[in-house]
Image (cartoon, rainbow, N blue to C red; front, side, top):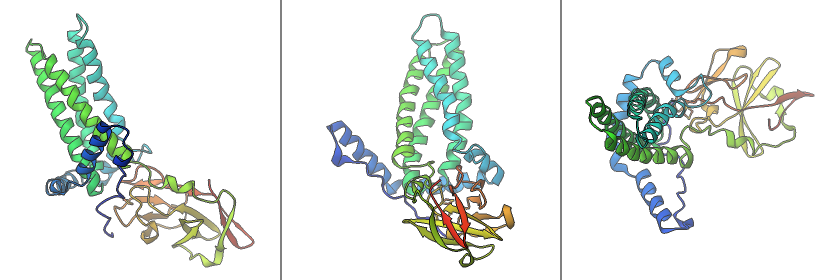
Length: 306
Ligand code: FES
């Protein structure tokens, strides 16, 4: 497996487009966080630990959301966030203490699986994303700690609401960083999807079918998009060549299996995609690799945008 780059292309946090001083200040803090190399020793040790603990491949696939078609972590997060927000609302109403306590208990219990899925995704991110992810996780850990304190206080007959509101505030910071990680830095997004819009909409001749090696992958540029071809007898399949996980070069990946079940293994983190239909067989990618319509006419291979 070849080494993946340590950082994704820098997200333009856009301080130059600031409309307000507050916006520019936030962007400066986020940029500082993305580039905070001093976090790397801790981040690297934690990455090793998570990789060692969540080792079985089936478990990793389960936690990445390979079976779901997109990352599992944001789905699991819904439960603790929903429970904590509802508990805060009930805490503001008279006579709802027991219901609020039940929701706090539910949120604390649901935070565990969500965190495990998040750490598993985090362990296969680029360093700049891991820096932001580390502080996102730390904020959520503090929030769950405050909620646990709130729960213990409530069960002992004390108020516990102040700890709950403090937990919600810190969880808000964690959510803000999670949003930056997902939407500004692109963690968890299908990095291959934007390539589709850059492909020609009409059928485009790529070359002769005979020029494609049997049972091996070959990369051709269509428009300006690298496309991965795989020929099995008369059948030719075509996939976007940049891996949907972190844009690794699938053209350098090993082909495993044969015939309609042949798969390509990404050389960066080992995501495995079936060449016939782009399905994810193993993560960390959670989304299928985009497949292009492909046909053979008069011995020539043609593809177009889906
Ligand atoms: S880039 Fe990570 S598995 Fe392909």
